[in-house]
Length: 289
Picture 1 (tube, rainbow, N blue to C red):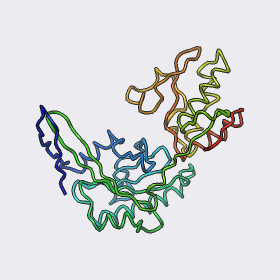
Picture 2 (tube, helix red, strand yellow):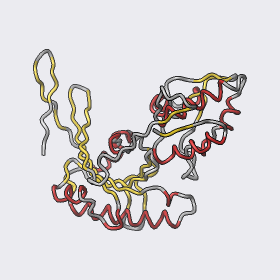
Picture 3 (cartoon, helix red, strand yellow):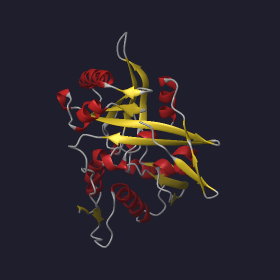
Picture 4 (cartoon, rainbow, N blue to C red):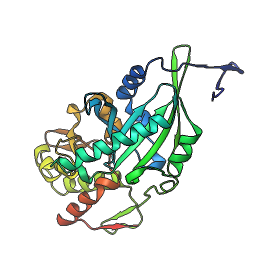
């Protein structure tokens, strides 16, 4: 399979060159540095965070990558620089089984996180695609396939991904909206709901410090299923890495007495409910639509 892609320069169509990864380790390093490539908004798999790379599971086997998405799904990623065949699928299933046992043996709460598998390669075998779409895997693991192709043209790199997903999950993205404090004229998404709650709390508590805001909205509200804090609910703007400023936080900062703070935009099905339950305890009315 080869896509023919063109750029239009000065009115003429110019083909761009396919530049596949020569080594699997090169692909692995590229994805570790750019995990957003493995995002899929339509499937609810957003803002992946790298947990492990080359995780040794026994003397002979290593998991290429472990990712955690904002819906708290943990993904075991198996990479192939060429065609992803049935052997790669069976290898991924074995790794998923091992990781599932590892989760169950931990006392950190990750056993409650959905475990999924992702096969990544330049091309996926048709037989494997049929198994993915039919969700034909033991223990009910959800497995996705991603065809990843990289192109180059005059100093610019272009990456294209083509996803294959179990038919049972296609179209099940959560589009729930929320009404805050009876204001029915404005429907809020998950992230914007959090932002507006924090904003309102600060407005009703003039002179509040960042430490006070962080005490009211602790990181545990967002990272309830992880023993390691991955991401802040609120953070001082100056403490945020430039690469994370707009990727992980709302653009509009909020002012407290000791500086500007920013609010996390990374909320999904897996972590919004604890926040809503907590917000209700401090006086906020939140209705689902």
